Image (tube, rainbow, N blue to C red):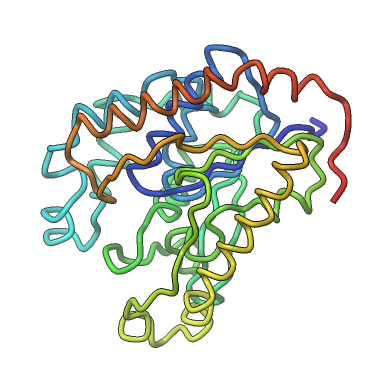
Length: 287
């Protein structure tokens, strides 16, 4: 399939339910993309767009938010991972709220999960055609540093894709898509500050990763500047929270989870005509 439209989905832990709301509106209104680039929660919740399961992300998060074996301190203490592998990537997807693996596999949308190779410090964009076969890449994309063990796949060690490319807009630009829709999980104007997290203490064996982490906020802010520039020139569509809803990374308050999801729905509906008009244009983005 010739690629024309790409979706870029930022992570942000449980703020990613904003993206889930946006994508559910997309599916209900036949807003289709040729490719999706998902990072961390953007990948974990975004995969439902390819499996065409409207409402799945908010449904299981509301149901299991306070289940100790889902994610949180109990899982971190007992397994070494804040997201419980057995519960999140086996029991949940195969039994409790089944992922439609067959629809995912047959849907022609190309889905890329962004992961960080901790040995090189570089992002990798993994095209996942078979979610059942490559579920570990989704797990790696969402494995937050300090509270997750590195995920080993084919001899490589991976962690959260957001460590190296939180919003892969530049990568998508390089791929020459005609249309780009970016879904962010922070309000307009948000910028990151320099981090003083103990990367050297935790990742001393991986100097390239430490270097990436040191420059992370610079790269993120440059990407936001670029996105806002393209947005101001009407070259791309950007959906972001229209108001701030304060949330913990591992939020257990189901009212807040519902609020951020509902905000994604309402913001998307409010921009639906603009999105449809944008997608009907034939102009190609000029870098």
